[in-house]
Image (cartoon, rainbow over all chains, first blue to last red; front, top):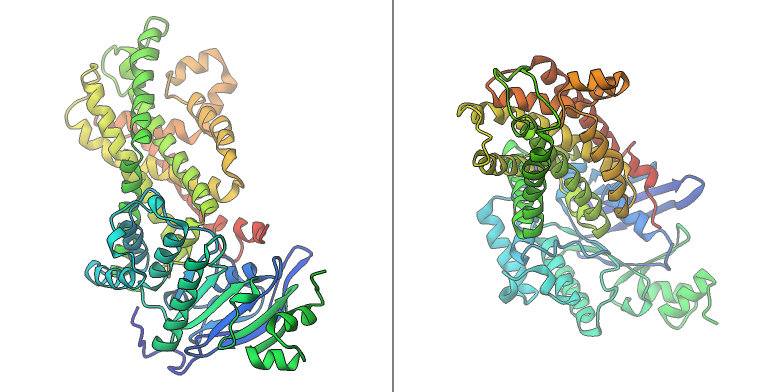
Length: 255
Length: 268
């Protein structure tokens, strides 16, 4: 799992390239010709209402099941052809809580490290660093079930980073969190992108999570309606704010 | 991914299964009490009803308790395998199945690792049961404790492969009651676990055929013979065959391109 693999398609390859991605469940078209790309350090907010196709998109990028049309490349590796290379470079925070409540925080993290084939010593060092960064070093040996929802999410983001991915996926990570925990997550991911050059794709249906420094991808009923830096998208939609832009793009007004 | 990555991953999955097992003390106790109740109460009551003649691998008349001991080991393995099924479904509901499936290692390897983890726990339970049963008079030859190990591993793998396949097909958590009714009980009762097959044949020819095609019968016989230092080739062949079929079905069930996971696919 050498990250600087000489046979990598191209050392300059983009963290994530999604091209003409389509997917259907029976008759229902969940995604239709979705294309976008992320560069190093990009923080993209995937904005869409419930049912827009965000979860399907994430399932395809994490290869829960294969896509039918189009392609997904992670640092140049096509997920269907080179799943192992692609997944090794990806960190994921799922929408549902995924920590094992009966195991301690440390045990959960070591389990994840093992799934990625990390040697114990390296795993221990990585875990220590990531858990310190989310401020939970003193809870390492407590059962996950004793943590609050916000703390569990922080453990999950630490876990997603244990194997040093360069690309981070977060599927509605702030659902059910209080304001402080939500802010912590937003700030943490912002810092990771700005200071460490990670690329992050953050799915959300909460418009106020989209700040003007981010990129935004507006997904609606399986199609991308607009994408780019937030100020550009707002301007192109002749709107005053991203909220207005979103409403006019999707034609869904809160009445 | 090099062999050492595979090894670390396998070790991690087995380690987690072990931790889960010790952490859930209720599960540990239940898994032991269940066969002991059968041994101590059921067998004691039935020893006067069922006469057991001399059949291989036994060389003498044996009490009924001694006859059903291998069947109860089979029961331990069957429950452990299905509980692992349950935990796969439960895991998936809770999302931690997702954690497993984003591992960069190939999916078939993750599933096989899960099987190995299940078997490791089942083998441990079987030996604890044999240890207690020793004091209840179930005393196979000392070497039998060693020769039974490969039989335990093989039958455990077969049953957990079946469990994995079911977990890829089953939709919801509450269906475990269905697994009990439609998998565990029929497999257990339509087998040689509780009664020798010749008695079944005399009683009901159809039931006899059912027992014969039930892979669980052969798992029990494999364990029974191995416990008395003997090898049952026919049972072994059936168990290995069933293992390969169930494993193929499980891997297919979780395949990202074809499997049931795709058809189920979408959100909501």
